[in-house]
Image 1 (cartoon, rainbow, N blue to C red):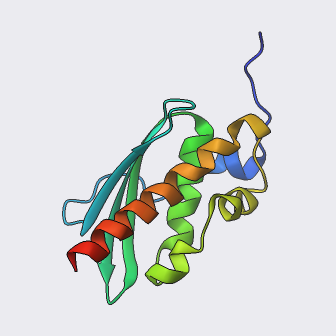
Image 2 (tube, rainbow, N blue to C red):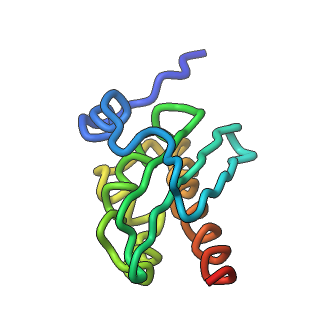
Image 3 (cartoon, one colour):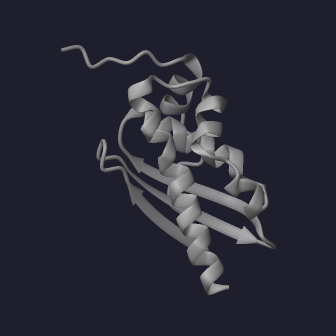
Length: 126
């Protein structure tokens, strides 16, 4: 059975050269989520100042789509206020990447889900 998926150039670019990848030692909040559908795991590191995402890093263990969606999500939220960043849904992520194969769309929820959970914890603490 052929498990290859057709990915567009932007998805491949973000998979091969992910932005904001790595750990952050001085993160204000760290959140890890996983997808039971495919077993992908994402850890999101956030630095917040004056209610704005001033820095973000991620580590994703998973398929190319999970890495690409994590990469573009971090690009989209960096510099935004928390409320602006919370509006960046999985649909926005897929749109910014120019689409994903139907069987890989579920990967696009990892980063927005991690961000939402991280902000909930952050707001409970502050």
